[in-house]
Length: 137
Ligand SMILES: [Zn+2]
Image 1 (cartoon, rainbow, N blue to C red):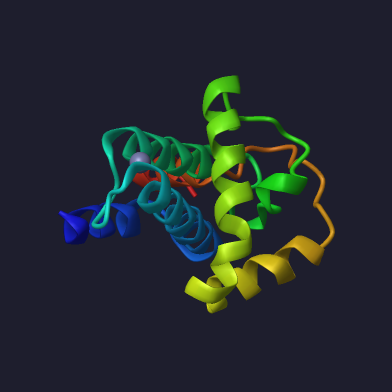
Image 2: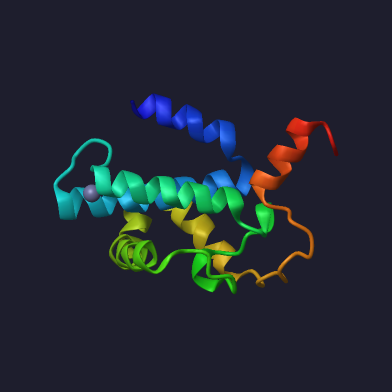
């Protein structure tokens, strides 16, 4: 099951977006383990949150130039998952350095970058994927 979801994710996301998702997913895992006692994978609720995060990354208007979510000027989460995700970030953020140092360091570096302006044309991963599919460039 873990393998399958890994494959699905590689199919949809790539580059910075995939790394960002791996970071978020790792954070949800840390949170789920401590709060819901799930040792392998995620509980239903957390899995839903993870899927939601993936969808949002796929549709992020910045595409590969996405700033870190905490500094993003676009508020794309619905209030409820936003609140849950906030709790996950607060809990797992400080723990990431120990558990996943490479992902954590990348994220911290990324955070220092200037936030880009919102692109005028849609460059989201999803949009580009659809263009590719329909044969337009
Ligand atoms: Zn959970």
